Length: 550
Image: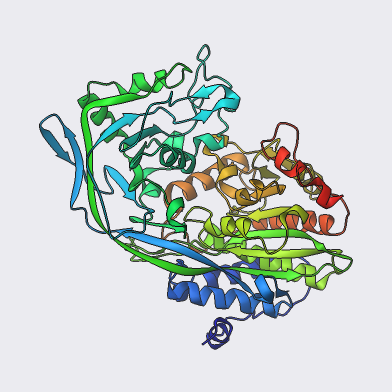
């Protein structure tokens, strides 16, 4: 049975007739309720939930009158994924001297693997503390100082060296202050450990530095995903993960080290890696592994006069699938807001484009797989673009919208990056709203959504993400906006309770979707090419392809 036939058999085509251009909250909610229903089983890649999701997406885009936007005129771009899951720990713990302390998986340490093997094992691997693990010659910063990590486990602090820096310390202002750079992301730290030949990597968890609690760290349940890679491109890390803060403190103390003092030392450019003398980490797990044929769904509206120029919208269809029952007995972590609401927004934008005048430039709608597994679907597209990235005007990504009602402002993620933020301000003003900079730039949200895969290739990007700051709500002001952020991130982010409930007020989300529609329509009807601002790390990449646009 084809995915389209499956979708039709399940009755998942659009139920509401195509009418006005207005972004309607009721339509958004209807789509979210469908995608977040148990029928889709939490939309995990490589499951029956994915098969049903892909069928639904294709049927919806087709019903809206769009054309396939994938390779060879297909709706989907196949994305081969390595899927691994750790079994029950055979060995897990810390040896210090003659004493071995077992660690509890999920409570004291969280691990996964990206190696395609049936078993992983570290036997008393030496531990080396590498501070924040930053190698940034352009900023005059090197935490490694040439220390050999081969065969060892690297232990990192999360975020950047200047996250907690105070006046007089070397790190002040080196990495954007409270604004996280890519050096602060866990993905960078694991990549850097692998580049240096480490066999394992552990990041010391703290909620302020990570931007989320331990419950989010453990939510994948020991599974991981990666793009399928050639043997010579595999990571050297047998296990990678996080160590809980108090467990880390005790580990350092057992080696005669003060973690708080080492945190301060790691804010100095003279910091050198510190071996945890007498300490060794052991971990052995059986691994289930498989190659999953997942898919991005790509739908397109061809441009009337410049079809080779593309304005891209993006949102991710995947969520976290099946997990342990919550207090209400719910087992599916279906991501109603993260990011079924983003997919619903794309449906609404597509509908509005189809009932309005034909765009001069082409519009591409990308529903990505495996965002929750490391932006893998969008990264695969960026490696294998169907439509040339040097002729892609912009990427407009929607990933989590606030559901607490209308707001007087819209939250900007990544201030100072590119000219699309000026478009955001211009069209927000037409709504009688203003732009507010993200309130928690230390969370590094600019590097945590699918637009980042395009940014790394120079495509100007704009992200709407409702948890980036407290919206100034029409009802309740910024205090009410902060209460919504705290409730969502503290309780339901990546959990089963990310579900549609009767408290949702989607008129505010509809405002934001209308903003993205207005920006995209303006770009699609113009000849201009947004650019990166001076000082952005992505400007030079885009500049190299200027000839293709001129």
